[in-house]
Length: 122
Image (cartoon, rainbow, N blue to C red; front, side, top):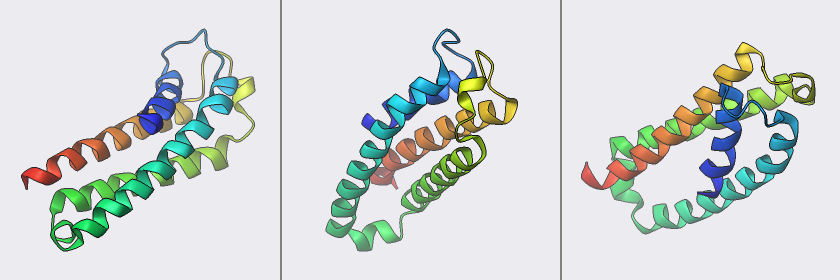
């Protein structure tokens, strides 16, 4: 919840919800929480992978989950590279590309979680 909760709020704001909340302070406050959440998820996921790596290696849902995580991280890196320091000037309406990045981020993280849940059923 630390990852998706933190970055999910930012993504929803970028998408156009909560227009009364300034984006720059929201990014500054919640991005470190999202990073901490990702580090914790990566650490616990590594332990779970080590426990049953052979079964997971052939699971298509696990592969899809990893692809979604990779896409989410690439999207986050691109967002940071393109928009670093510019959010303060956006006001209530971020640029279309930033809004799309937020929507993609939300979709990638939710799909990663969904595929993770489906691993047990495939």
